[in-house]
Image 1: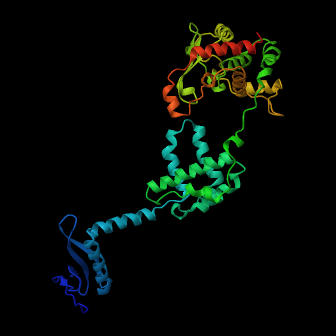
Image 2 (image 1 turned 30 degrees about the horizontal axis):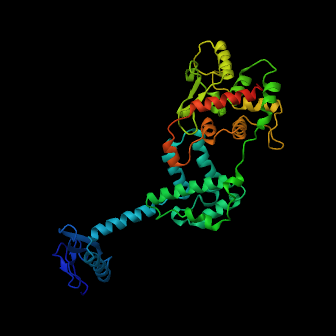
Image 3 (image 1 turned 180 degrees about the vertical axis):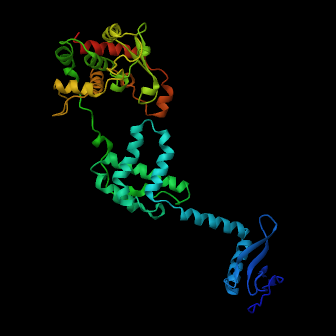
Length: 397
């Protein structure tokens, strides 16, 4: 096709080389626009596709574009739909975020699902400390396994639990990026292949320092009982007798106590496993609670309130154990309040109580799904017998 001489608003000029390719003159002499007329293979409708303005788009360029569009049609697609999809893809790529931006967007989306503010802050704080300084400014579609391995390597063996959590969070961010169309898939899953093997969980579990179970009677008689009772002493003794977590006990409410049946029902919201937990109360446990009830003005609210009528802080129990230099089974470490659960568990094993009964006393979840499906009782009657024996041992009876 020779170079056309276009008159303003003249009739379209058929190219003749590519079927449906026309040059449509504009209102200005010597200029126009290229149009490809075709029947959409998807809708069956006649359509027009602009291929550029003339003379900016040359005859050769227009034919090349028309030839490519005809190839799309031959493959059963509408070239206008294909162009729209390409434009959207380009727009998405133009909007690809940096890793830091992606992390903050994902974090904002998921924040409502966290249980408390501490978890919300921890999630992003670890990335701010270990990941953002190295790769935070890089686009997510430019990141590969080696980038994440470089972030994790300094703490991979030194802080394996922290490193594993950070890896999970990075993977969550990159999966969000994949779901948003910025990348095809997260590259974090294969990071382990670039790093040394971490020690097994059993090798790195940090157990809470615990008072050896055989020392409990002397601890109760020599440290807890000699002085006048107070909130801290009562709370610690009740914590030992119920083998409960300090958070469950420090927030104990009077309406959770059934004195008639000697049962303390801990609501699911306060339990680690988010399941209601019934605790059989022993004679000494009831005695402690009755003495606390006599001191209560209303018999409502917290059993162990602070001066501000809020739960007593965990540090109260820690300070008591430190002040009295209650040594644990870990050399050089003071016993912890949580460690008394371990003392109870060791006692239960040494005295022949079944694993199932002891684990239920500690409100541990059954990890085996099949086993859990058949365990629909909390064995409270069997646990009551065990806890009465535990109390008798602790009190030296």
